[in-house]
Each structure stands twice: as C-alpha cells, then as structure tokens.
Image 1 (tube, helix red, strand yellow):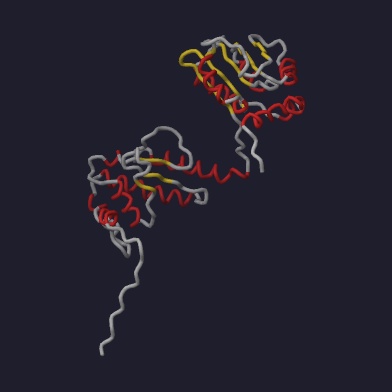
Image 2: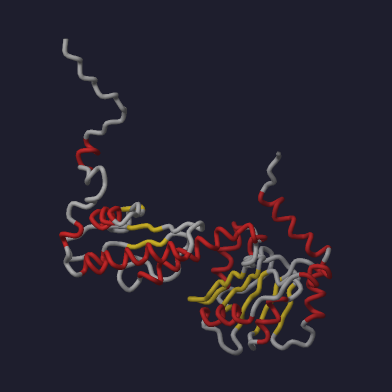
Length: 299
C-alpha cells in the first residue's frame, strides 16, 4: 500500500469544510471545566487576546468568547467559517480570519495564549511550532485540546492500566519517593530516596518482595533515575490484587525506614535459590546450559 506524504495527508482536513453543516451537528462541544482549566493554566483574564487555530464551526470559540477573551479565530474552510459566523453572530471581541495558520499575517508577541481544538495536527509542523512561539507574548501558553474517548471499548485496557498505575502512585506517595511529581501513564516510577540513610538499597527492597510472593518490579531503569523502581500494574489486575500488592510495599517501606536491616539482608530466604552473586554473573556469564555429568557406576 502506498503511503501518503505528510502534505497529502494533511489535505484530508479539507473534507470537513465540504460537510460543514453535518460536522457542526455531530461534533460535540468542549466541556466548560476543560476550558476553565486551560484558561487558569495560561493565567488568562478578562480582555486578554488569544488566537484560535482551526476554529471550525466555533465549538471552542464559543467557550473562549464567553470568558470575555478577545479571540482571533483562524479557519481555512469558507463554509465552516461562514457557519461559525452565524453561530457566534454579535459575539463581542471576536475576529474571524479566513486563512491557514501557515499563511495568516500575524504580528509577533501579541497573544497571551494560542488555542487549537483537534486541529493543530493539520498544520505543517515545519511552521506550526515556530510560528506559534513567534505570535505568543513571552511566557505565553499553547493550549492543545483533543478528544479522548473515555468510553471507547478499544482503549479500555489502556485506561485501566493508567488508572491502576496512578492508584499505585497515590497509595504509596507518602511512604515511597517519586523523582517526578504529578500523574503518570501506565507505569509508576519510584526512586530510592526514601531508603536514604537506611543502609538498604533498591536491590535489597526488590529481593524482599520475592519472600512476599511478588516478582520484583523493573529495577535501576531508567538509568537517569537513581535506584529506579518502575511499577506497571497491568489492566488485568483487579483492585483487590493491587491492594494486596500495595499493602506489602507499604509494610516493606515502613520496615526499611524503621531500620530493620535483618528483614532485607540476604533476602530472599524462602526460595529454592538464595540471592545470586550478580556481580560474578555479569563478569563471568554462563550463556549455555550443559547437562550435568553422570556418575559412573561402580564395576
């Protein structure tokens, strides 16, 4: 199958202008809470000037105007722009411009924020990022708004994995340490800062997990995080199983902070094989299995 060039693929955006009325009828609006959060992050107040790239029939534009912002709305589609004009007729502080962002004549340093709702990907990336930076005032904000189908069955496993990882984050953030604040994706990353001055390492902590019936998480990766512990509770785990896992980690973290070195030294203790000499294994790896020599029967 022949793959379209990037410029040809971006040309498909023109189809929305050909079905402008149907697009306007079926395209959902953007939640007020989302617009409020974007305005808060951008530090926007009444009368501030903002640019909207690809306003379509005005779904996001309506929310921006309602917050007393002065909006310059770009839209290359003539039919969509005409429809947006009718939808927002008489709205104060609103200027429509029939042009692509790549072609629009815009002064530098004039907008407090640039908004684009499900449209920024239609702009040539060789232009979009640089030109956005040029039209924003110093310290301005680029707000990209995108739909995400929370009820989309095909993405349900991904959502469950992200939810589980953030559940781990919230449940352990008071006893373990994270190198980066805020929400995570499907993996939660901790470091060994919470083990500082305990004499216990990430390796000790992970080996103690084996005695509790859990395979250790990914350790010492990513390399840029000292003593990294990367936990990925997959979408197949129930909340009950995640809670049991969290209970074990909390108890181990608390015992480590209490200085219970004996709990961690030499772990695991209850496995057929005790702790391996990983340094020797790295220096003298045995990469091939050989059957053991059989003892010869006495004559």
